[in-house]
Amino acid sequence: MSRLLRNLLRKPLALLGLIIVTALVLAAIFAESLAPHDPLQPDFIAILQAPSSTYLLGTDEIGRDLLSRLIYGARASLQAGLIAVLLAAGIGVPIGLLSGYFRGFLDDYVIMRFTDAMMAFPVIVLALALAAVVGSSLTTAMVAIGIVYVPIFVRLARAQTLSVRETEYVEAARALGNGHLAIMGQHILPNIMSPIVIQMSVSMATAILAETALSFLGLGVQPPTPSWGSMLRVGVGYLETAPWVAFWPGFAIFLAVLGINLVGDALRDLLDPRD
Amino acid sequence: MASYILRRFMTALPVLLLITIIVFAVMQVLPGDPARMVLGQEATPQALEAMRERLGLNRPLHEQYLSWLFGVLQGDLGRSMVDNAPVARAIALALPVTLQITLMALAIALAIGIPLGVIAATRRGGLADAAATFTGLSSISIPGFWVAILLIYAFALKVSWFPSSGFVRWHEDWLASLHHSFLPALALSLRPLGIFMRLVRSSMLEVLKSDYVRTARAKGLGERAVILGHGLRTSLIPLVTVLGVEFAALLGNVVVIDTIFGIPGFGRLIYGSVLRLDLTMMQSLVLVFAVSVIIINLITDISYSLLDPRVREN
Image (cartoon, rainbow over all chains, first blue to last red; front, side):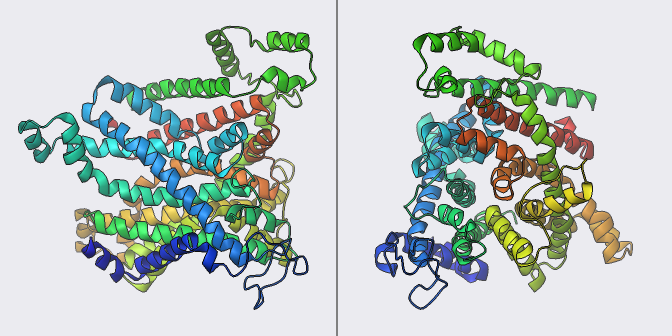
C-alpha cells in the first residue's frame, strides 16, 4: 500500500488529484470550522455582492456567503457520490460474482439480459422518473443513481470472475476441498478487486455529475440546504448582474470531478499492469 | 454477415421485451391513482369508476400489459394525462430536434477529439501529451450544464454572437437552425470529446507498437504516411463501439441542456412530464429513450462487425 502511495505521489497529475480530493474530504468533514460564515444566514444589506474581503467569493440572492455554502455543499455531493457507488458495488459485485462463478441458465438468460435492459435507461432519465414519483430529495437521487449503476458492477464482476475461476490457484483451492463460499470470498474476490476499485472511482465521478445535474433541475438536494447543483440553478437567474453566483458552484463541481478522475486514472495506470 | 445480423437482432428482441415489461411494471407499482390524477381531487366515486373503466384499469394486469404493448407496436403511445394530446405526436415533434443537436455534438467531438488523440499518442511522454491528457480528462470532468451557462454568458450576453435560448427547425431556416443549435451542441460535445481523445490515444499507442507499423516504417514510409495511413485507420475501429455508448449518454444529458437553452427536444419533454406528473407521457418517453439506446447499440455492433471480421466469428 505504501508503494502504491509512493508511486501515486511521483506523478504530478496524480498528486494534483490527490490534493483536490483530500481538500474536498476535509471541507466536507470540517465544514463547521472552515466556513467563514453561516451558510444559511442571509445578509440583506449584502445581496448579490461581488467578491470582497468580507465575502471572498461574493454573496447570493439573499446575501448568503458563497464560499461557506460551497464548503458545506461538498457534503451533499461527496455523500451522494460515495453512497451511490457503494450501493451499486454492494449489490452488483455479489450478483456478478455468483453469476460468473456458477454460470448456467440464470447467468446467460436472466441476469445478463436483465443488465442489458437496465443499461438501456439513461441515468438522468431514470433518476428523473424516480424523483418525480417518490419525491425529490438527496436520498432519492443517491438511490436512483446507485440503482442505475448496479448493472455496470454486475457485468464487471462477472467478466472478471469468468477469467479468474479457470486459473490454477482457484483450481488448487478447489482441490484442497474448499467450499464455494470460501473460494469466492478468499480466492476470487481479492483478485478481482483492482478493476472494481478503478470502476468505483470512475463511477463516483459520474455519480457526482449526475447528482449535481439532478439538484440543478430541482430534483435533488432541496433548498435551503447548500448544494452545488441547486446553487448553480439559482445563479442562472442572475447571470447578467452577478455572474459569480453561477460561476463558483460549477467550478467546484468541475474541480471535484476532475480530482476524482485524476486519482482514478493514476490508479488505473498502477493497478492495471497491461500498459 | 447476414447470419450475424440476424443473430444479433435475435438477442436484442428479448431485451426490448424486457424493457417494456420493466417500464410497465414500474408504472404499476407507482403510488397514486391514475384516474384521480386525470380527474383531480374533487372527482366523485362514480366518475372515478367510469374513468378507471375507460382507462382499462379494471382489467387484469396481463391484459393491460398486452393491450398497452400492442398499442405501442402500432405507434399508439397513449394520450397525455395533462392535455390529452397523443404522446406519439409530441415525441415525433421532439425527435428531429434532439437528433440534430446530439449528432452535431458528436460531429464536434469527433472533429476535435481524434486529432488531439493522434497528437498525444505521437508525442508520448512529452509536454504535448501531458497537455492533451489533461485536456481530455478535464473535458470528461466538466459538468455540461455549467459549460452551457458559461457559453451563454460569454457568447450570448457579453458578445451577442449566438442566441441564448430558443430553437429554429431545420426545414424552416437551416442557417438559423445551425446558429441556434451550435452552443447547446458544443456544451454537449465536451464529454464525448474527452472520451474519443483518450481512446484514440491509447489505441494509437497500441497500434504504433504493432508489427505492420514496424514493417511500414522499415519499407521507408514517411512518419506521416505511417500514422495517417496505417495507424489511424486501425485505431479508429474501437471508436465505433464507444460512439454508440456516447450517443446514448448524450440522450440522457439532453435533459439539462434542453432546459437551459429552452430547446423543444426530448429533454424538455421528459422534464416537463416529470414536473406535471404526466405519467403516460413519462412512461412512453422512458420507453422511447431505452428503445433508442438498444437500437443504437444494435447499429453499433453491426457496423463494428462490418469493420472487424473477427467479431462475426465469435
